Length: 189
Image (cartoon, rainbow, N blue to C red; front, side, top):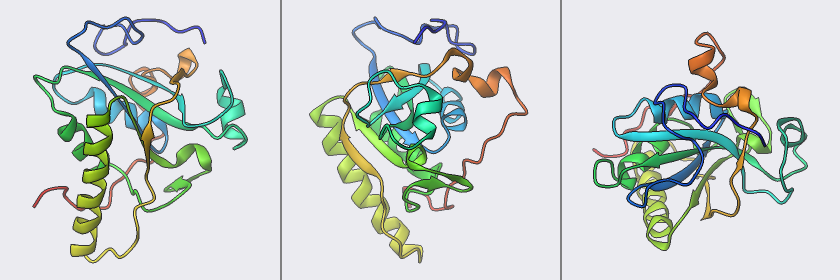
């Protein structure tokens, strides 16, 4: 997919190669426009990009993903400096920013591409993500929300960049739609 390799907000590249000291985290929490904005607004985030992952169709387009036949979900790739921002902090933002109990939807956005997922790039990320899911499930239960988290957690396969017009969409279109919303349950208390 041809993309402009410059982040509209941070000015940094959105595609590799990245300096060795940076790490990548990949999250799906509904419509990727709002998810990307949530992460680029955080301190010490170097870059973000939206794309598709978790499916089986190579090089999917937005139109193909919307059919539900590719298996992909809308994701945001977050490039960060782990000495300034921890993966745990990114996970906290992930859990608090959406409803991880809705299955194949977020709010009014319905379909496989809106499911909640974490795609990990190392065994440490995988273990940390699984532990965070268990912790947040306990927090939800303590808060009176007796629904199971449906978030898919697995190693990252391929991250396919979304079309250029989707990249940093809400910076280019500040009045654009964003239905992202959490459950109001803090990750830590």
